[in-house]
Image (cartoon, rainbow, N blue to C red; front, side):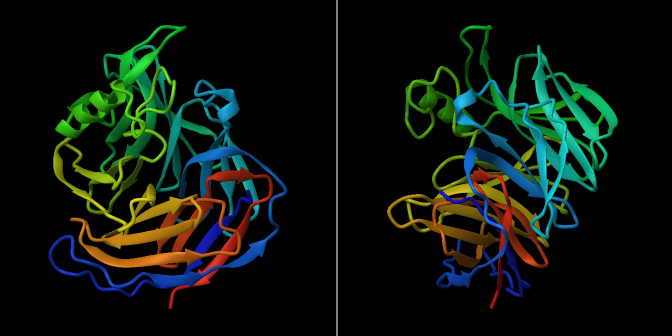
Length: 340
């Protein structure tokens, strides 16, 4: 497989449709062209990716051969010119980028430590959140108002046999106080399905895990003050969560093809972009742009020369979309395309 770093540049001038869940027009094909030097190999999978306000992309590779316990790989930066950037120290399980700061989160005993770093990796602050149980953190988001959304797995654990299949979602205040735990009927359904061994929720033979909040889940913070949590279901289920921990609404984004799996969500200019990929016989990358209640706005089908990278959405801004391949390579390069 070839890894590639994709930038889809262009202005989005599509007006939102009124109402919810209207059918979108046929997908707009985007032809991507290569910029930069292709990688020579890959050995890891990208769990998540996001960018800063300048369009630089940050990601963390995960090597499946090391197991889920090895989650301390440095955060890697790729500049918008497709050049290798710096590497931030990673003493946590996930990260978030906001307003020029980097947040790293990880579970410690019965707490979650969030470290705030300046560009370059120097420490600015560290705070301990108190969920009162052991959490394997899978996603972190920072609200515009400063609260933290922590997503992960809870359950029973010991050094030899952790059993973590219960979805955990909670909002914490900026000073670490618990604001509110979130446990919806869909969370309980996901727990039961994972416990029963449903392959859509639990991978074969795993003692812990729940895909509802793991690999294909993602989070993004909106300028409306809320956080959008996308769960790893098909089609994806999105919770709109307020800083007070209230689930304001839920909706699904249907790609129109059951073989497509969502892998990323990003917020820009009052809209959401949801990235879908498929590594089947006919690989396909689709980006659906929807309103904040799930109403369809536009679909974009990415055409690229090598179709085995399963790219995930890292940025959504005035230039368009930036995607990073799931399969990590050693030499990042860009694929660029202007929207028609």
